[in-house]
Image (tube, rainbow, N blue to C red):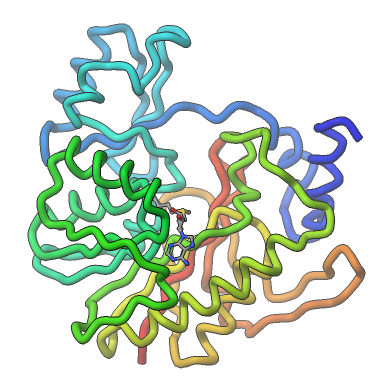
Length: 312
Ligand SMILES: C[S@@+](CC[C@H](N)C(=O)[O-])C[C@H]1O[C@@H](n2cnc3c(N)ncnc32)[C@H](O)[C@@H]1O
């Protein structure tokens, strides 16, 4: 099977849940626009835009948040990762949809935050920026290799309120409880195909099912690490309901409540019913509809699923 054929076949299981499915498919293999988040710990958006535009980059404000811009590069060699401003930590090359989970988390200065699967640090550095580097973030990841990138990003962006830990999040124990937790969970990454067209797509869908089990264990640990009334944001870059609504339904069973999410980008609500590729009908707790799904054809972006949960 040629690659596009396999890609089309893989995503076919989502035909009934993705609005304007043919439009979705027409976007799935288009290259992703470049985007950045200005690091306001070091520079203002206006000053950075001026510097970049004087070098020939074209910046367009994102609807998501004033720190985010879409960028047209001059050419392949002078990309957004190869500027002095990047080396100085004036910005972070970040997908627009990747900026959503920290915005939903809404961390405040002086709080104690846990980022359970943090590397390479796109969201940790955004959270630090939102906290104006006041308070404490514990940024954890299981991968020693990826933690190197996390540390280097924290250094480059001048983040000084973060402790890095290397641990399987399912075995992350602490006597101190957190105000807010971000679980940007390991997932099948189906919604990142525009960034990585070589993504292995296994037509047996074993990956979504096995990630679902891991994600549920991680969410259970997050429950025990959160203060009463604390917020957990759960995000994954996949379309698979097994990793999205099924995990959120599990969170509701163990004691979380779900809250509405509202962001200034087009989205649809979480699915409550669908039929999988084997013809099995699945239905979830109606409350999972409060989660949000962003598809690539809505805003010419990657895809993302986000749920805001409160420990009650
Ligand atoms: C979606 S990526 C996180 C991206 C990161 N939040 C960011 O915005 O830069 C998922 C991460 O989960 C980590 N991971 C996988 N299994 C884990 C586990 N059991 N405990 C902690 N982290 C895990 C991976 O190493 C990977 O870095």
